Image (cartoon, rainbow, N blue to C red; front, side, top):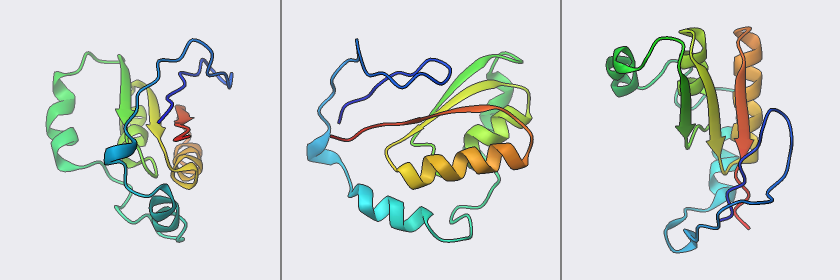
Length: 116
């Protein structure tokens, strides 16, 4: 898996660190298919653990949501006033996360992790 860090709309993987997780990676096609349905498979509210732990984060701070999927956790954090980035290997999930954030009128930086 190649992870490229993206600054505010730039799409460059230069100076990225290479992390090989191919041995442990579920099928990206499986996740794309899961997120392709009209509904939000895991809903639009954050998981309970995040909701319980959010109070420990500095108000208005920067957050990184890994395996963001369709945006429920990163979007919720943005609605709480955090500045965040959501990363996922599913292109469909990342696009859905962008739509969810836009519908809530919040900003969530999204990054598609190229598994190649």
